[in-house]
Structure formats: C-alpha cells, structure tokens
Image (tube, rainbow, N blue to C red; front, side, top):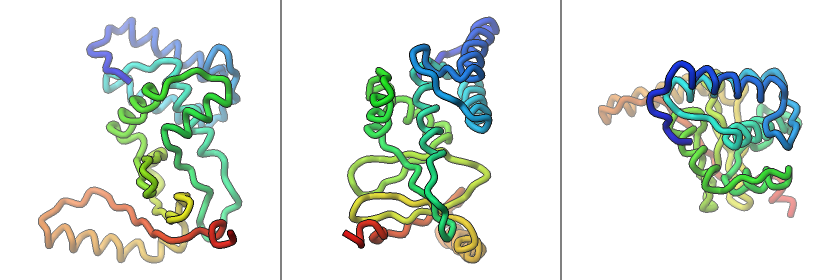
Length: 202
C-alpha cells in the first residue's frame, strides 16, 4: 500500500464508492466472483475505513489480498480443547493461493500490503522458525497464544478455558516484569514449541 497523502473529499468519496461496490456485490476482482460472508464484508469495510483515515489508498489487488486472508481464516478444523486450525499464512502461501484462483498479483504487492497492515496493527506477524514470517489478523476482541510445531512449522491458535484459567497469573507476571525493568508492557503473547500430533504419527 502506498500513502495517498492529503485527499480531496471527491477522491475519498470515489474510493469509497468503488470499494463498497466491489465488496457489497461480492465481486472482489472483475474476473473473479468470490462469495463474501456478512462477517467478511464488515471486516473488509472496517479495514478500508481504517486505511482511508490514515491516508492509505486501496486498490483492487490489495482488496484481493485482504479477502484471501479473511477466507483463509474461515477454514476451521474441528475445535478441540480450544485449539483451531492454523490461520497463519506467509506471503508466498498467499501468492500461491491467489494464483490457484486465477489471480495475477505480484509478490512485491503482497509484501508491501502485509507490511502496511502490520504497521497499522491490522495483522500480526509470527515467526515459526522456518525462515518465513506468517501473518494473522489482529483482533482486538480475541486474545490467544500459539502452539508451534518444530517439525512442520504449523502454528495453532490456543484460547478458551485452558488459557483463561492462567490469564490472571500471566497478567500478574507482565506487571512484575514491567515494574522490575521499568517497562510499559502493552501486550503479550505466549508461544509453546513442540511436535504436533500429525508429525508424531509420521
């Protein structure tokens, strides 16, 4: 994404009309029809507003990246003990997914888009130890941690009762560390490294 600088009211209105039309009709790209759920529509709209307020311009390709990210998040495995299927994608995996759908979008566009989204706090980056950064949407109303497999690099979101039972202790630890090191802790994330069930069966 590139900064659009100071925009006129007319430019903002035209951009809004363009994005709203693409999202509400479910047509994310003129050559591809992607069914957009109500939840995805609301999230895409919120992201568009967030970027517009900060002076960033949306393009068809960038909306395509966001929609692919959201669709990937909707792919869930059966929940077990608060764990869900990995929702983390690398830039290369995003590019591969879009190519399979017949989209032409450069890796550089994807990298730039992810960098800006991370800067704006809309996505968070995760290092799973394989040399590739992976990303997920940062949700203010959802706090979770990760199980990371040292064999295949899969990252599993962990939330629910297992984490809630220790949430107070982790917050207390954050307070202690902040006090001891004169550090203003803004957030925290726990990562547990090990071997997933799939790799143990191999």
